[in-house]
Amino acid sequence: MSYKEKMQKLSDRFFAENNHQLAPAREMARWAIANKLWAPEPELAEEKCANDFSDAMREQYITTADGRRIRTKHAARKEINGKQQTLWGDLFDNPPRDFMETALQQRRQQIYGDCKQLRNDTDFYNEEHSQDNPIQLVLDFEEELAEDAALRIMELSKKKAA
Image (cartoon, rainbow, N blue to C red; front, side, top):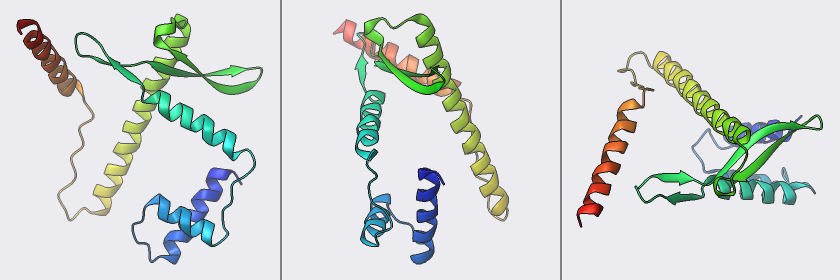
């Protein structure tokens, strides 16, 4: 059983033992540790550090002179010596074009996967609660992107006029 599967089973047990009440993950962690159901594995410190690096880099942005927020660190999964690895690069260190193409395409695939899962979750909820008005889900972001671009142009114009 994988570590994630173990954690999923522990979360199922937590909910069963706590009357299926909503709870924060930290409460689940305290419960698992207190009941000696979870303890850190030896390689966990290295994995935690690597995950912390990834989380931090994923949220590293700059704002350009024209007001665009740009993510500076990018990741691409590649197979190296028969093993899947995620490589990170800084946009300002001129990473190779093929690396950036892969990184950007993989992020697009992640967004699609999130949207697909959101659609499945919404459809299922609506089916299970057919007596209620269905929750409407719009996955076309063109209007929001156009609004953001227009606002950025307006802000830039205001800065230039001042």
